[in-house]
Image 1 (cartoon, one colour):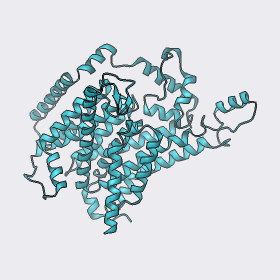
Image 2 (tube, rainbow, N blue to C red):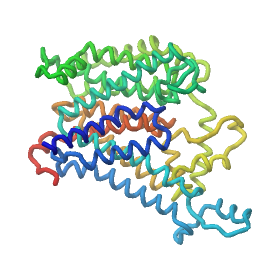
Image 3 (cartoon, rainbow, N blue to C red):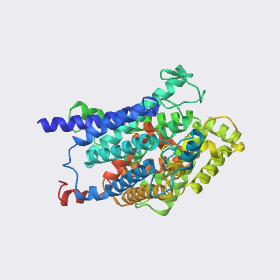
Length: 461
């Protein structure tokens, strides 16, 4: 009995992190990363392993290997006077100006890499914990439904806040993106991808119902939890949730956020339809109808986005300039980078007049580029390959799985949306969205294994 209670508390703690991470301004402050890491560590230590099999460990092995590699890079970057690699020239400059010898490091700051390592550790723990929860298909369905309505709740708050207090951001004054909805996030682009991902969690189950129409007439039991799950997963509820998240996405005014979200909707729909036995005429009718629906959706809810595209275009020239300067840093420090978390301290030395004098470039606005700047090309390439491998597993399961196929479809659609957007911005570097992203991806990965494996193979011990 005590073990069951401990497992229940462990799961509640994990779900609390998934739900609350977007609330404190996207959890960008270091204190929140520490709090969520501590809670996730406690949840993992007390987690129930009965649902895990050996194949789960093999599936998660690339993640663990990548974490080990990153840890080794961080240690190398923080090594005083490293014998294996010349230190960053900034330490020689400091010694010259101070007139005294100082220790040299690969990293151009003393504590930057250690402080930066907390967030990826949090993402890994969230993904693993969501994976463990979702080894049971029923739990995976409930987790995705919870995350969908959590995203919808934040969308409702964002919409109401924009009308009720357009100049406020929770307890603070809104300093940027006035006139646009950001919810609990500071940056509208991150808010757009968060709500676009939430919309996918409503859309794919709605497609499943439209195709199968196998919804029962009543909840499985009179328990309150079963009745809430039954009512919140009805087609009407799913449609309302999708509409709210889509409206919130459009109200952010984010060009890439809305356009990529609509592309993700099309991608999810195509994945769902692809394995179905449909005639050519019906298949092409679905493709054409979906394209028309996407255009109508953009016209109906994307007025402010279309206006911004007409005014500023699709390409941000300053961002392209920042990418070029980031590539210049990579050329100078290709193997071990400048130290994790040190982009902001390094970029000013490479900043050109074309970027102007306004604003602080604390991020590269491209997560892969920033990883290459801070960790070096080998480490960044391994991280990218790890995610591409997981995308492949989700995609394969989306096309092959027989039961609950919509779960890996949700996983790969949200993963593709978050990863592609992070190539041109930094949404995945915001913990409030990153935790949500990792939880959905972990849920999808857990259901990417065939159900027979969990029945036929031995438990993980």
